[in-house]
Structure formats: structure tokens, C-alpha cells
Image 1 (tube, rainbow, N blue to C red):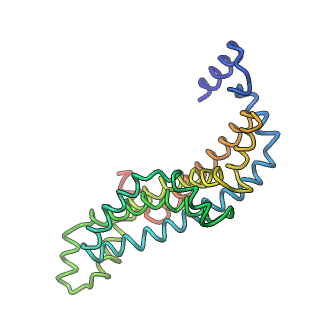
Image 2 (image 1 turned 90 degrees about the horizontal axis):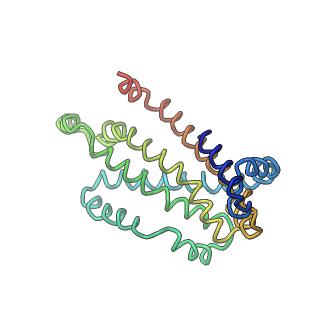
Image 3 (image 1 turned 180 degrees about the horizontal axis):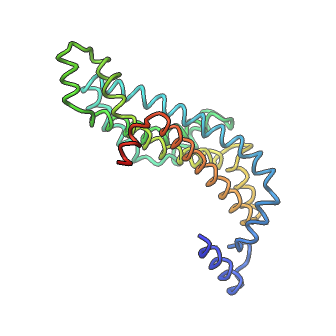
Length: 240
């Protein structure tokens, strides 16, 4: 990373590239320090939309995964629809969300939910399907209900996959919130970036990108910590 920054700085200065096109890292750092209070203020709105949408995505994904585990027929009908939904670029329906829900937080939350839902749902379903078949048969022989099998076998078996999908969704959450803000909002990092781009303040745009990346990394680290606390047995087995 240090080598890349040095090369970037040197290349911009040697070629005389204008700052409105590609500013050197030193200028980006200066812009970051100058606009940091404003960036943090906008970050509150973006982070709120990201966390709310991520929470909604997790809740819907968990419910749907359990329903599909309870009914193979529902899984056969719904799973292809989940895959098909990912062929529709979210940014193409985002303008409709602004029309339907206005310029408040709701369109951003819906965008984040749509972006984060798929990796969580698929990872949960795949994790349940990878559960120990012998354990499932044993519980069936012992007279366990389908819900007991899901609660005692399928959900614990799916937790490693669930957290893997959740880490992916966590990094997508900020991106989804920013995309929603690009298309219509009064606050947020997406709004900050749009205003800076219109003013040709490319250094400020890069400063916002740095903040978005840092928050995404923090979300990833937080989910990793929660995973280690929730399924320590999984990480202990990996060490072996």
C-alpha cells in the first residue's frame, strides 16, 4: 500500500496531472483532515441507513431460510427466484424507490436490504443443506419434530456459513446506502460525494471514499468478532 501511494504521488507530480482529475495522496489527506467533521456528520446518516437495511436483510433472510428448510417445495420454488433477482442491477430500480418512498431514509434502507439479502439468505440455506445427514436421521428416529431438527441441527450447522455471508453483506451495506444517497437524499456520504464531484473537488471525493472504506472494514471486523464469540468451536477446529 505504501509503495502504491508513493508511486501515485510521484506519477501525479511528474506528469503534472491536474488535481481536479487525479489529486496526489498528500492533497487527499489534506482534504480529509479539512472536511473530517463534515464527513463524520454525513457518516451518521449513511451508517444508520446501512445498519437498518442490513438488520432488515438478516431478519428476512433468516425467516426465509427457515421456511425453505421446513418446506422443500417452497425451497424449490423460491430459490431460483432468489438467483434470478440478482440479475437485476439494484441501481436500475433505485430511482423507482425514490419515487415510491421519497427522499427520506426509507429508499436507502430498501436498497441496502436488497443488496445484503442475497448473500445472507444463500449462505444460510447452503449451510443448512450441509448439515450432518446422520444427525438429522437420528433425531427423526427419536421422534423429533421438523422444527426441533432445524433448531438443534440445521441452524447450528449453518452458523459458519451464515457469518461468512453476513461479512460479505456487511461490506455491501455501506455501498448500498451510498448508492441510494446518490439518487436522492439531503444528507449522507453519497450526497457529500455528489456535491464534491459537481464542484470538481476530487480530493474530497477520495476523502469520502476513505471514510466509506474504513467504516466497511469496521463492520467486517465487528461481524468477525461476533462470529468468534458465537461459534468459538468452529474457530477452534480451524486452528487444529
